[in-house]
Amino acid sequence: MAEKITPRSVDYSQWYIDIVLNAKLADYSPVKGAMVIRPRGYAIWERIQAEFDRRFKETGHQNAYFPLLIPMSFLQKEKEHVEGFKPELAVVTHGGGEELEEPYCVRPTSETIIWSMYKNWIQSYRDLPLLYNQWCSVMRWEKRTRLFLRTSEFLWQEGHTAHETEAEAVEETMRMLGIYKEVAEKHLCLPVIAGRKSESEKFAGAVATYCIEAMMQDKKALQAGTSHFLGQNFGKAFDVQFQGRDGRLEYAWATSWGVSTRLIGALIMTHSDDRGLVLPPSLAPEQAVIVPILKNDTKAAVLAYCEKVLAELKAAGIRAILDADDTQSPGWKFAEHEMNGVCLRIEIGPRDMEAGKAMVVRRDTGEKTPIDVLGLGARARELLDAMQTSLYERARAFRIANTKSVADRGELLAFYGKDQGEGSGTAAASGGFAEGLWCGSAECEAELKAETKVTIRCLPEGRQEGIAGACCLCGKPAKHLAVFARNY
RNA sequence: CGGGACGUAGCCUAGGGGCUAAGGCACCUGGUUUGGGACCAGGAGAUCGGAGGUUCAAAUCCUCUCGUCCCGACCA
Picture (spheres, rainbow, N blue to C red):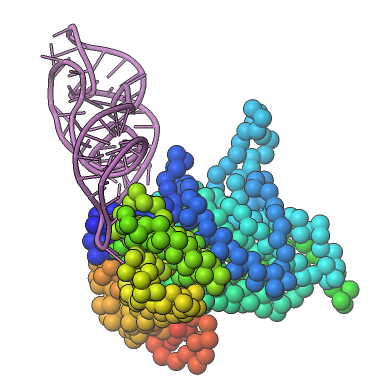
């Protein structure tokens, strides 16, 4: 059984790939570095999208769409931006059989083309704020790719807003970070740390980058979303000036923020197990599957009974299916639905039918409970809710158990082990999150990275007050509390 | 872009100069089954990644090429 999935303890990376492929979430494509998102994976993305999109709209944002291709010269208008993205651009040099006068790049992110348009749309403070978002794909020519986590083309949303004042833009940056955290925790059941990036880790062209960071089961960090305060960098680069209430011209203040299909990778690496995918009920395409136990003499009766149960589940608002295929054995179906991450399995055979019961099995715990078919919808709902809570709590407990406060260099190095090795990714290899004080110098950061591959994931929000003590790297007076980890 | 491994059916693997390229999984047909990945019988599926060369003879040897994976470097 389950020879299809490499256990996490043997090879975490391979386990992850096995889950993605076997649960039919995605597949490798003929295009190097690009993957196909299959219907089962896309269905999850659609549910994630729906949660974000609703909140974007509730906070006043509108969806729009900008071109895939961006004139190369646009990228060059913001110095740091072009430096940051140039190495990973795909460039279009020909069109209609002729060489283009000016090459286009395939968007790696859309700040530049969007701000080139904002110039036309913003003249007065009355035109602000402009709160636009687009759902699209972007392309970054990555040298080394991993399904969902890093592919050359990926799906995401990018919000781009323009504001009258710095304070408003900062507020927007934090509002969106808050929405990311809320959806990550409530729906993806990912406990995340929200915080600010260090200078060296921030977005190319931003004044400040904020992020949410999650811990995967191998104790490595995964950046799950980012929100940038861009200051007036793009306003100036694209000459987006407006006349303010005082009659003076000022450059617009900007933010941008994004989450991508990488979230699906986070979902997998946080909750799934050696049997396959485990999904939070709120995002699972199938929340329950009824597996009938069919025997020759009782087949018709059991199936009819299952149909009634299915109707009751649906009436209770549960996304349920009936697996009536009689060419596969129940055991085969059990394994298959576990692989696919169906939250509840409801076994119904002649014995259950006689007793008016169904055997309900939770995907995350494997717990089996015989439940009266009368009122099954409501009970299933309770189980799904409990599962949603417990996935989050379990992940949170895991993160806490693998987070350590460190006072000095010795403790930090001991926590991560001298040699990073990556251990080809066995779950024990990565240490976890370390919390320590930091002086703020890029040298400390760079040195640590070179030595151990550990980086500052973020400076957690709300914990930066009253910092006193020595930098855990160099011993000089500290300015920040930092969360350290190896990351994806 | 450096180091390594590898391309044989949808997938995994055998065959390393010779006669009809072998097996497992998956697939199709029929039947018996069905409470943790069922069984029997039959069937379909391959110009052995591509090009060139050596040879009476190439999946097999040589050269080139394309591609994939792993490890680095790179990377929100």
